[in-house]
Amino acid sequence: MYWLQFIFSSIIIIMAGVHLTHQADRLSEQMNLGKAWVGILLLGLITSLPEAITCVVAVGSLNADDLAVGNLLGSNNFNPMLIVLMDLVFRDQSVTNAIQPLKSIRTSCWYILLLTIIVILEILFPNTPHVGPLSFGGVILVFVYITGMHRISVLSAGEHSAAGRPVVEDSQKGSLTKTWINVIISAAVVVAAAMVLANSADVIAEKTGLGRTFVGSIFVAIVTSLPEMVVTLSALKMGSLDLAVGNVFGSNMTNLSFIFLCSLVNPEGPVLNDVAPTHVLTAVVSMLLVIIAMTGIAKKGKPRFGPLGWDTWLMTTVFLAGSYWLYLLR
Image 1 (cartoon, helix red, strand yellow):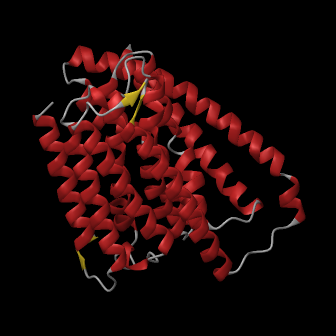
Image 2 (image 1 turned 30 degrees about the horizontal axis):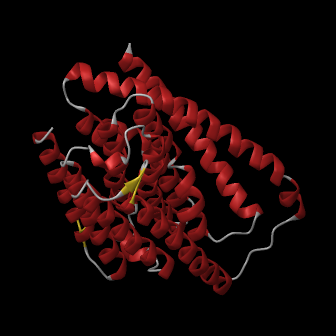
Image 3 (image 1 turned 60 degrees about the vertical axis):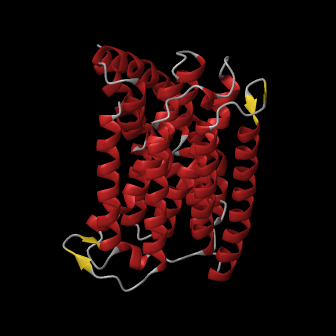
């Protein structure tokens, strides 16, 4: 029964996430926004809605802190692996050779690393000063996130201006209200399905004996990362590599900020105070994946080895090794 709920809610999240993505892309055209900005800020937030709701329900209703944190950090492992998936279907050359090393993209990577380090320190040193549900590290986390998003917004605006703004037809502008309504409805469906997903995942973790950390980091993280996968592959098909990679890194930044949100709804205080130390492994793996991806995007002219470039082969190795190690520590 709970497996059926898990599968059904997963399908709903995928379908609603696909529709949500199309509406967000239409919104970007109607509002004349840059693709990198849309990928990092708008789609990064929208496609992270399943993670947000799943974590709020897991912490606030189920007292499943490990499930919530495992979902967020696990998703940050799966998201960079979408670049590997892009490389598999991008036959012309190594996909990271074709991705522009935009300053907004590089900046998002640096902020991901900084936010992840803050989370790791909070897990390793849980008894830091806090007021109610907010720890000192949690406040720094949300401050760094807001600062980073503002900085990326400024950089993206400059990049978009330099590239030239496309002309938006009046007929497109007139449908802006309808697009916003579609975005809100799709987001509401994602929220409802994510609530069911969180409850079913918690029962699965208990009945299978796999544990909340492993289930959150693997099963729930896979499902809640499916909207990102749909967005990334759709953007790749449209030839918009900036949108695709921007969504990957934007989602990672947003996921880390949701730890602050989880603390707000946690009746027992900061959410990272009582989680398993094995989450540090997941966080370190996510950092390594971002570093490899960032290096691959910066270094051009890389050869392919079979279906992948050396950077995406290395990402695959790190991801599989980290997942196996996490399974052993479950």
